[in-house]
Length: 370
Ligand SMILES: O=P(O)(O)OC[C@H]1O[C@H](O[C@H]2O[C@H](CO)[C@@H](O)[C@H](O)[C@H]2O)[C@H](O)[C@@H](O)[C@@H]1O
Image 1: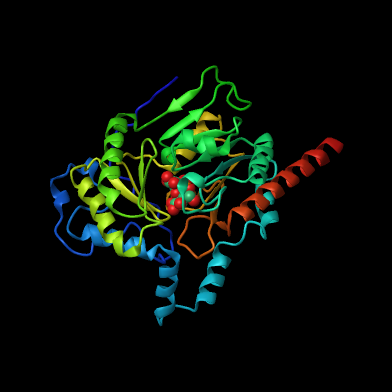
Image 2 (image 1 turned 180 degrees about the vertical axis):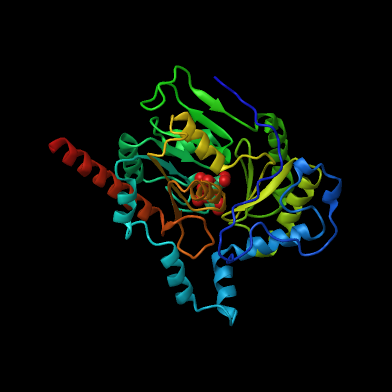
């Protein structure tokens, strides 16, 4: 078992797209002085800890909720109508189903490596994170895909938890937003004698447990708040919290972070996430897995990454920067993204996976008959 540590470095800021964002992420400071001046640069979080930090996050929480984002668009006279917005976006990020042939022709003769996010991609978003089950039909589709292509799950969840949901031993798993990767021994692709465990934030484990405990305690008074221990990341869910309490909740999180400049705050779908300020994310995890599979500099490899969240943007950006691979965003709404294609919901993800299986089987058969 290898356990490499990655040096704690300056922060990687979340991926930003070329076009103007529909809502800002990470949130801007709204006012206040910077308490971050005293913090060593290597630990500096994406937004400083000045007085505006809480307000900035609160605004971001509101703006990233689709109903808010939508009404903001509709009330701005300069913005195109909602429908125009949708069709402009879909032209830029066409459906991976309607452009299926374009995708497969780009992968012809090349090795596809499949990367799948879990929540909102393989399982629908539900109120209770512990009930985010994947359907049997989706599991069967992923199983079929994994028979044909190396397949990895890259999730914000704790690795063991996401495995409990997926329950497919033949996959590679990266949990805690890529900070906990397990490459099993002796797979078809790696043939390694020992499993490889890569945990670049391992030194943060005791601190993350402390943070989890502290947040369980402080958020106890807020109805609907849920704190999840994702090993190298702690998630504070606000999906079931009344909007009037969001300010108090974010204040609690921010005040805890004030004494921990080595941690940073990010936001997912109705969730605030506290994680170590290390230069590691889902994009780095994608690169690490490609390397572990022996495909590091292989130009004949096409990674396909499907995800629905801010944190998946790091992976989309890696593919865009490499000029290699296909990023597919799962979203019903126009969102600022580095992905090239889109799918509306997990059901469409399943259809796409099954199309891919069908196409690959067909081309293998055709080749064997040549
Ligand atoms: O990277 P992912 O696999 O997409 O994980 C991201 C977060 O997903 C989970 O939260 C999200 O899904 C929940 C269940 O549908 C939903 O209730 C919540 O509002 C969403 O944010 C998970 O619970 C988090 O720990 C993950 O970080």
